[in-house]
Image 1: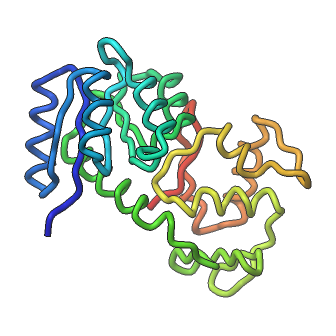
Image 2: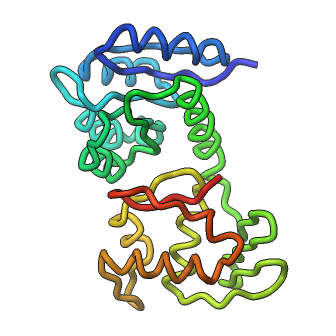
Length: 227
């Protein structure tokens, strides 16, 4: 069975060859570009399911490529995994805000990158499948009843905590910035400021008991729900 098409964008040609080798070994069809202009051209021509995108590119940089892809109606649903230099938290945060699905910092294990690609593609395939509930083992998030149970025992959550848990658990593995979580939980009936996201996460972890370790802190960026 043929797998998805992946566009690899990086100006380090040896790294592109290494990534291509491991992806093709896993059955993916791989195309490559070494600058932002070619990346946008190939994305529009080849319509890949996922783009592995280095942020430090000659010409149009990776953040601008990400922005242009997400602004294109025909490419907006293309999954993006960013490659970043170690410690570039500002770039990571900006990329996630622009719509990237995940990131890896250099240097990285090619096998781990393939695993991340698999996870992101899995999420993007199921994201459009609406459900009335989310089940993670004994943890049930019932969207219709607006309640959470663990082993059939109700877990009393505030409205903000429920929205926060739903946002994280609906896309396990995806990193959300604090701003994205703030947007998800804010509404006419709630008032949340940026730093209190951390407070709500701390409270949510206490209430989730054995499932508390599913909510992972991504230092300097935000949180994700462990797959």
